[in-house]
Amino acid sequence: PGLPRRDFLGLSLGGALGLALGSPARLFAQERPRAAKLPGFGGAKRCVVLWLNGGPSQLETFDPKPGHRNGGPTKAIRTSVPGVELAHTLPRLAERTNRIALVRSMSTREGNHQRARYYLHTGYVPSGTVKHPDLGALVCQQLADPDFDLPSYVNIGGPAPGPGILGVTYAPFTIGDPRKPVQNLAPPRDVDDARFRRRRALMGELGKGFAEERPGSETAAYDAVLAKADALMHSPRAKAFDLADEPEATRALYGESAFGQGCLMARRLLEQGVKVVEVQLNGWDTHRDNFTRTQALCADLDAGFSALLDDLAAREMLGDTLILCLGEFGRTPRINGNEGRDHFARAWSLALAGGPIRGGRVVGATAPDGTRVVDRPVGVPDLMATVCHALGLDAELTNYSKEGRPLTVVDAGGRPLRELFS
Image (cartoon, rainbow, N blue to C red; front, side, top):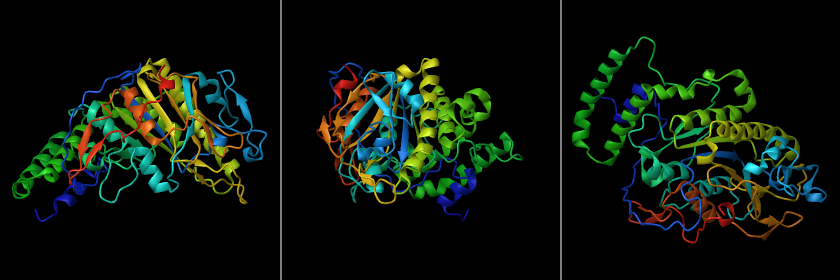
C-alpha cells in the first residue's frame, strides 16, 4: 500500500506498454469538414512507416548520380519503370518500382538528428513549450477503435516522439528486436488466469483511495493504460507478435535482419487490425565509410521493403495500406575525407507506396551534382498533407495544448502532392 502509484505499474505488468506517464495536457478536438478535391482521399486504412534512422544517403538509394564525382562508386540500375533508375544497392526494389512513388525533391532546414527526427514525425519543428503528437498518434486519434484489444500504434526497433499533447493513451507500444519474444506479454508461469484476476482486483482496491484523492486526466490515463495492458495480455490477436507461426520460407523472404523481421511483424499486426506500425532500421549516420555501410544497410532495406510489398499485394492488402519509407534528412553530395557523407537537408529523397499512391511516379528532381532541388521542392507540411489525404484524415482538425495553443494536424501551407493521386 505504501508503493508510489507509478512504481506499482512497473511491478504489476512489467511496464507492458512501455509508456511513461507524464503530465498529459488537456485535449480538445474541433471538427472542421474538409472537402476532398483530389482522387484517392481515404484510400488507405492503415499505415507502415519504414524509418531509416540516421539519415540515409539519397545517392546510394533513390537518387543516384553515376558519372559525377559526387556519385562516388554507386552505380544506377534500370527499374520496372522506363527512364527511372535506382542505386544498384536496391535490385529487388528496382523490380518493384512500378509499385513505388519517389519524391526526389524533399527540402528541409533541420540538419540536427533529434530536431529533424521530431520534424519528420510530427510535421512541426521542436518547440520548448509544446510536445506535438507524432504521425502514429494523429492517425490513431482519427481512425483507431478505442476498444481495440491490441495497441493501435506499434513501434518496432526504437522509440518515436510519441503522442505529445494527445496524452498517454495514444502512445505507441514499443518493442525492441522482433526476433525475440515480447517481454511481459504473458503472466509468469505460476500465475493462472484466476490468480491474475485476483491480483488485478487487489490493484483496483489499493488504487481507489489514490484515485479519489487525485482525480484528473493523469489518474484516468493510468487506469486506461492498465486496462489496455490487461486486454493485450489476454487477446488472441497477440499471436501476431510471435513470428514462429510464420513459415520459414516467408521469414527468409524478408531477410534475417531485425528490420526485415520487423517488416514481417508489421504485416501480421496490420492483418489483426493495428492502424500504424513503424519499423526502424538504424545505422544510416554514415560520416565514415559510407559506401560499405550503406551497401549492407540497403541489403536489409531491399529485402524487407520488397517482401512487404509482395506479401501485402498477395493478401490483397496493399491497395489500402500506405507505406512511407524515409529518414530525417539525406547526406551531402560531396564525399568527405573519411569516404563518408555528412548531414544534408537541402535536397533528399523518400519513397511511398500502397493505398491510393500511384506507383511508378517520380516527384521533383535534383541537379546533376545533387546539391540542390531544381524541380518541385517538397516540404514537410506537404508530406504530412499527402499522408493525411491518403489516409482520409482531417488535416485541419485542431488540438489544443495545455496553454490553449491551437495545433492543426498539418501545419499551415501544407498541400498534398497531386502527382501521386492523379
